[in-house]
Amino acid sequence: MKKTIYTLLILLISLPIAGQLSQQSKNITETFFPDVTSVENVTPALKKKKGYTNYKELKSFLNGLVVENPQKIKLSIIGKTQKGREIPMVILTNPNQKEKVRVWMQGGLHGDESASTEGMLYLIHQLLNDEKYKNILDDIELAIVPMANIDGYLKKDRYAANGLDLNRDQAKLMAPESVVLKNAFVAFNPEVAVDFHEFRPFRRDLAMMGNFGVVTLYDAMFLNTGNLNVPKNLRDLTENIFVKNAQKSLKSFGFNTVPYVSTADYNGEVVFNQGSLNSRSSVTNYALTNTIATLLEVRGVGIGKTSFKRRVFITFSVAISFLETTKNNKLLVKEEIEKAINEQREDVVVTHKRPIYKDTIQVIDLNTERIIDLEVKKRDAARVKPILVRKRPIAYYLDEDQKILVDKMRILGVKVAQLSTDEEKMSESYTITYYDKNFKKYEKVNQQDVRTMIIKEKKMFKKGTYKVSMNQKRANIVIELLEPEAPNSFVSFGLLKTKEGAQLPIYRILN
Ligand SMILES: [Zn+2]
Image 1 (tube, rainbow, N blue to C red):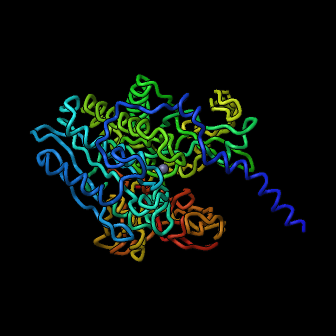
Image 2: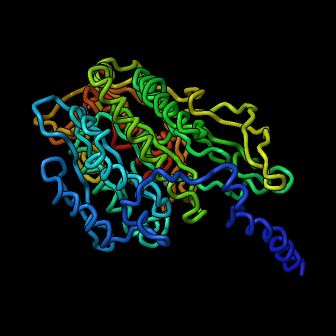
Image 3: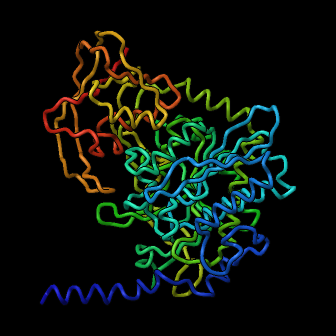
């Protein structure tokens, strides 16, 4: 009986919220998010009143552009989805003898974020057809995957066919699409990368705030990494030049932008997380391989085709801004990446912690449909503190039976060698001192939570032992994969099973 009443109560409470979640009033749309009429109806979804670009339209749109501009655009298939659909990628450049900067862009990694895909298609079309952008690709080679999660996209579903979130799968690589995308990314070896997304403005947590719920005001939010293993010069270059220029560009068109915040439950209360730390997601994953990277979130999930041209235009404008900034800073980009590869920090940060502080954000109050200030608790990745810190090794060694882990590192572009003779080395090994095998169910895996004790010893490593040198371009991602306590490590994701008292088959070589 008690349970029934409780269920009824929950139903009653959630009814008005569910209502709010699915609609945006005409007044809010017209006051805050009027559509952009200058966007031409040149892509499949822009051409039709209802619905989005389907798979057939995607292919014929890209094929059509290739036929018209064979010198400037090349179309390739990088692999297949779980449902067997071919995943197209285009590479655009102006043919000349100049040295190019390589830029990677992708849309539709989450299948219900439709303007990200359409913005990429619009970008490709405009780069090939609008005189204004004729020279932008003189110094740039641009790879675009416009519909990264095709199976999800065609169902308007965030997830891939097996239910995995492709933007939480970039360290463990459990979905076939993650492997396909990473292989293409590594082969292209970009210096600048932007992952285009949309966010849900009517979030459940927001419905509980204000008098009658609030909704996000900002058109666009930038998600940058605060991960301390990403060299500071690259974080600064991303934030202070690339993102700042894009924000300026959006502002000139009248759009509101801020750093990306998303609500989360933290010890029982709702906090706003700002920025990214996790290598399971694109922006931090890219940045850890010494790529200048950001992720754009446009206000769009759950509101259908409302303000669709506005969302496409914002996506397009940020892409153009990133290309222009790249073109205007060609030498700087190359120099700073070189510097990041060569000037490594002395230590590695295994775990981070974000301080909590009070802040004010602007939101739209659903009762009055006016902008109000909302006092919130925030955790900002840009203010992060290192918690568990270790000396940076010159290499990690792995036992010969750890081929599965080695294969994943190789997909991420990490070079792994094997010892050609037996070798005696001073090394540090990890012994598990605390173990929880069901710490958290996350993305279909039982995460392991461990603590370790490090033992220094002289050890004979057999011929065939895997060696991961930390003197390579993508070394920083290795820290996140192999240090067992790191939140997205192979141990944390259960790819390397262990137990209390066990010694891990991973070793730190200090000199
Ligand atoms: Zn997304």
